[in-house]
Length: 350
Image (cartoon, one colour):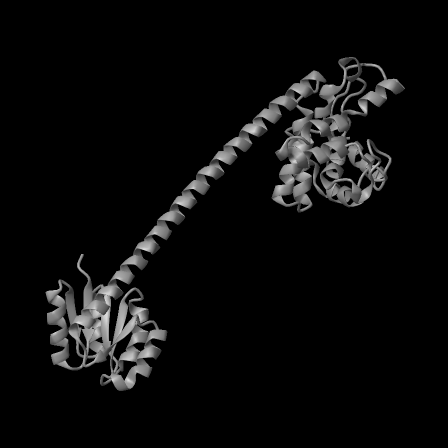
């Protein structure tokens, strides 16, 4: 489409001269004898370039320039001024005008200035369009990458869950102990206000807490009788073995820290390092408590599942020794029914 030019000047002869010259160059032309007439043209037409006379009766050209930049921000503006008023013309450039034309003007110079102004406008428009298209492409690629990462993350989670189910089956766990403690960890972590990204790490740490048992002999792991001292020392290696397995995998470095510390106790009497208090990762301190919940409310070869009330009693008894007191208080504030919902099971009521 041909560029559209509006000439605003109170002298009809100048307007006619400008329109004649511009039309000859192929431009579509409008003219106005005052700011009021120009306002009407701008409201009803797309104007690519406006030529404004500074000295006009009524609203002056420089005052109308401010209004024009609000009405049509994309319109390029050239100011027309006498030699004696170039200072005002320079102020107009600071207000957003592209350039100014001196009276009396050379029409060829005017045409060259218009050509340059419109070319600059075209290049700026192309650059804006390029930037907009680039942003759309970046947004689309980001969306695709995010979807791919979500798919990959889902695949990771499915793989980890399948592995853990195999481990639980090896120990003849019913209903997947590891998946339950993962959901319990999420419930307790959310109640504590743990950020989402940290919850994800804690959940994986809980799910994989016993991964190190792949390195423990079946003779020890599945022994129905009490372990002797040598066997118990071997069993106690599984947090370290789990850490060694996971810490070499970049996206599991965080969960590896929880796996390493999941048998530590708040008072420092746990293993493998005897960590205590805040020296134990928060995810491991949370896990220690929910692991007790699941262990006590599950059937074992040597006993039947215990009532939920037995768990709360044990948790209170071990507050400050085995368990972090602050975590105990939050644990006890969560109703039994919420634990049953996330664990997909019903506890015995004592």
